[in-house]
Length: 374
Image: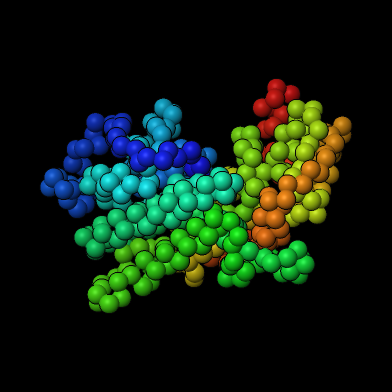
């Protein structure tokens, strides 16, 4: 997900048109723009410049013919932009930044990735609320307005996070085991509060929108949420996020450095590879029948000491020092040791388990060695 450094002032929006044909009538057009010209159906990705956005754009552009429209605070790199029908830049907090997209395109699907993540959100919680919650409301409102005009609901794919959980103690965390989607929803970070709030907002727009005035009209939003665990990428260095203690140790080992872990050795969280998270997100979007609005996904749940021991199998000289950061350790302690993934397995066909040692050996270690020329 995107995690840009947001300016305090709302930015102006500009559109980068990549293909001249984008503004011309063609097959698949539906609806009318504010100028009275036909609108092309498209898929929108916000926060498109982040790593999840990169992966989704590559997968969606290769798999389908529906044009992709990207939105981010900053311009995309040329290679990624070339896979999109159009790129818009602007601040998700500004509804006027999003309006030009709805004026030119009829959105069939939205992947809403734009967000300030957990660590950044704790440093500026008010800004996190503006970006994460108000930005989501802006987009939901515009999609609802489009749906009311066209009579077709908009599929709204929302990546959430294990940060929505809040377990009260380590003892309760150990007792709880794999947590279900509707358990322990008492987040202690602004990011978690924002994500849980937006899950409820999505449910409202999908099930209860304007109950007093909507009558028999269908709900405007087909809201679908996937809750990511800690995500690990073999292609990028960790940025210091709350769940990055494992990747930080791996990169230190590859560089021949001492690993410094900011949580206790027994700290445990669920994780999955970034590519598997992207697969799960697309599976959720493509599912014909879903039994719930929110799905947990994950692949493995090692402790910090188990991660360190597995790394030592590949880097025998690696040593780790536990330098506990009280705030970060408290956040990790409040997140579940694992999540129940049975609903995603049954409804979406998402794999529920991968062996961490094998993932480390086959995907992570070779990629990290390559990053450092080994």
